[in-house]
Image (cartoon, rainbow, N blue to C red):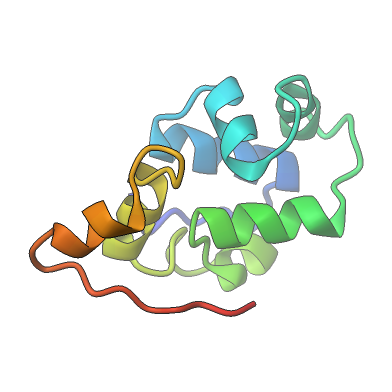
Length: 112
């Protein structure tokens, strides 16, 4: 899942590759990045301009490797363990107190 080499791939194809690697539907992917469901098919087909906010949301939400995003080299994700945790935990589904109770979880503050 990590070393997907796509140097000559459009951004839309990369979005689709990320979504497929994560096993997400277009609706699930849209919800996680905070956009409308109908935006994702247009982005995947390069029929809609890709704004900087959407790019940033995709890269941060799914821990996508910026090198892979820009040049198609390296692993798709920065860290498989972190990426899986980010995708699995939806802030609306688990509280901070519940997270603190999970053995092996270290909470850190991320400021962007």
